[in-house]
Length: 381
Image (cartoon, rainbow, N blue to C red; front, side):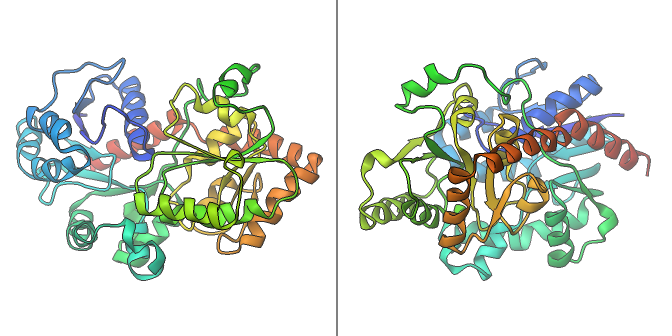
């Protein structure tokens, strides 16, 4: 079976959830079948590399996040010719994109549809989805989905969303969960040296992990934290992708007169340090308004960290009964869950144990095998 994977979404940082999905799926598919042909913009450790497409390498270097436009054009032209020349049986896109007129059976991945929901349903979050990108998704994505032989989603919620939004046959959509890096995200015996570099101590802080974006609901999280009794610290770890929203968060902190030492914004945390931050946290906080999956949920659980997350979108599906679920629109609901874990250590321990059991169902090896079986089924149809 001749499978080609378009992994050109990978960048040097590689720190987004979608990039992690692409990276681990590539590695695991290659482990299953080393004849898989991976087209990437940069080398992937442990996999053969024939060289990056020059135009994409230059685009990433000079255009940064705007390289998306060049990559989109390249997908429809030079990559399409590459697929046709190599007579692929299946071509797989690990991102929400694909060829408009694929010369082979195409499988695309849809991680979530929040760009549509926040355009119509949540006005407060519209700014984070650029207008031109919303238009692309509205007009380009339906055509790609129709032309694809199969569609992968990372949760049942996103599958149902796709069915309702684009009227797609549910038999065409296949749920394949994210996994987590089992070698990195685990219980660590001594997180103290790393925590000390950040001025933190084990068990003294609540942790948020994720990009700084409006739909992540961080201002309500800050307001909930301000209602707590005790000496906890709130740590925000994530790349800022919305500067005006970061200013809004800081303005909220000022309005609440929270001491600067009570809230730490760490920006991007390295892959090496993140497991230590999980290990030392009282709980992970992910009260998002929408998630297609919510990778920090399973990373925290693997580290033995209790989880507080939202009762909407995909988060209950991923967390199961191993997390405290809150109403993300209610500051009081978020605050009550945080206070519960501070006051009730037995409940926190029960969540910790439940999380360690729950996370065993999310493995990259299992996800890749399901995808490989889907590729085989598609190629034979």
